[in-house]
Amino acid sequence: MKTAAFAAALSALSCFIALPAAASGTVYGLWLTEEETATVRISDCGAGSMAGTPCGIVATADIPPGEPTTDVNNDNPALRTQPIIGLTMLKGFEWDDDRWKNGRIYNPEDGKSYKSSIRVDKDDSDILKVKGCIAFFCQTQEWTRVG
Image (tube, rainbow, N blue to C red; front, top):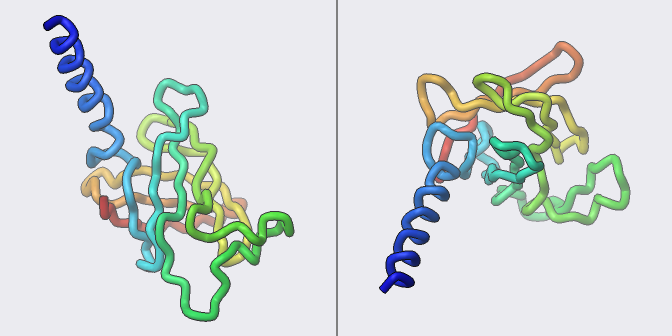
């Protein structure tokens, strides 16, 4: 009887712990890019901090027939054969008050990585503001939560 009660309590606790990763209001989840050509799954990649560290992996990509399905534009020739699907696109973020900052966003279209910050829109938790910068020139995209 004690074992059944303990198992039930553990099961309930694990459901409670898993809920925030998928809940709205967090950066975690599946996001459709602004161009609607790819989805990126943002998960907690750890790194030892209490809040965890989000990273984004390309989950799906609309690759036209005949176009390469690998990271052919990567600056590192050894990485040019890695598939676009499964590619780490967002990484290295630190939490700062209301956003994740000092991260990097990788653009497989030009093979370059840029300074980045991400945050859920304050007015709509189904919108993710993804900012990429080169020096002082920045561009922000809005990605839409799809899961």
